[in-house]
Image (cartoon, rainbow, N blue to C red; front, side, top):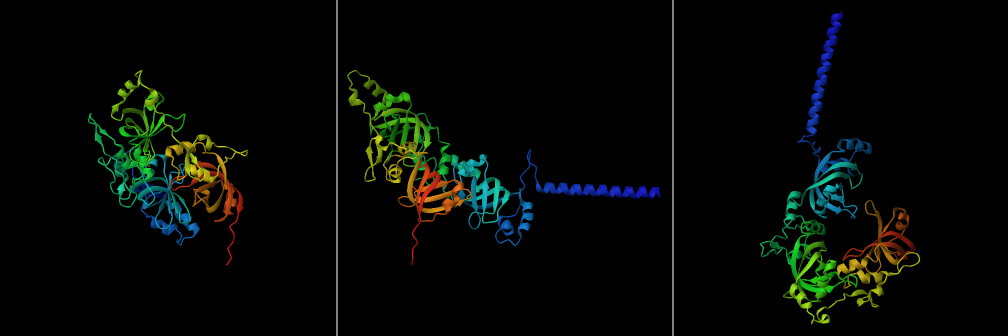
Length: 485
């Protein structure tokens, strides 16, 4: 009897051991199906389901109950996908660059969250681009915006791999943001000239084709490509359009190459004598390093500037001549005063003194300037250069104002926050941003209502974009009269 019991026990133990081994092999086999093991790393686990597959499971027309969706989501959460869609939006602020919305059917269906390492990749994509992207399923929503993907990456943009796109950008080949890319620039387009030493020299005309206002490259692509040119040495020839922006700012000189001011030269303090030798409309040959990109008629600024020639004379010859005792400094040295510009009574800019645009504050900390007065300084009709506007804007930036306007739009976005579009003269010319606790106040207004509002000036208006004001508040509302039939 004892022998029989031991025999049965041994058989059961053997069966249990065999079952354990089989289960372990099946489990290991399953793991190796899910993961691959490249040298030193574990590959991301990708699922084969398309966006449409998961949309049918979790989207608006799914037949699953909410509890069934949650159970099914647990099978996919944390897994990686590789899908193709259209860029619907890119980051809504400089602090929110890492969010990109993707459209697969209607509206935004997927939100990609990128890491800092992929910032340059985000910069090279634009709204409307068809992209192939990867990311980890992290959050399930129950609306058109269905999935949030973290650890996102972009592999293909408009049928061009990201590696190829980066390579083309480095070579100075720009890509349009349409579905089919065409080569816009090349080494020939950059008008590279050979110096006596056999080196290629970048010309103004070449860079203007690539980075100027008529270039088809997007601003983000310009900024990305500019990284490869910033700091490079140039030698150009142009006409002096202005000198200095004020009595204490004589180290800036504007240069015209075609129309208007195209380049701003920033001189060091020890080059004051060079600046004094230059007259307005002098044709000068200058050298320096590419610094800041503007990307419009004013293309860029140049630092570490040196003047090689004024007209056809070398600067050394002029310096020798100016040091002669019989030379009358008054006839050889002209100090050109750049105009200080503000508005006239007819709301058009004129040349007047800086004192006339002095910023005055009220007792409650607001500045005394109307929208019309401010827009006369920074609006489209003003004759100042962009750099002049940028400098003058510093006097108004982060100051609070009180204006009256008409509500054109208002709402609260999940990412963009609580905002209101306001018309002061024509169209939406002010974007007013509010803190979340003012939601009831903002949403109680309607389009066409007249409001008195305050806010902090953040960004001056562009050619299309309005002034941006933060820390907004509504002090008074006059409701739009109801129409009767």
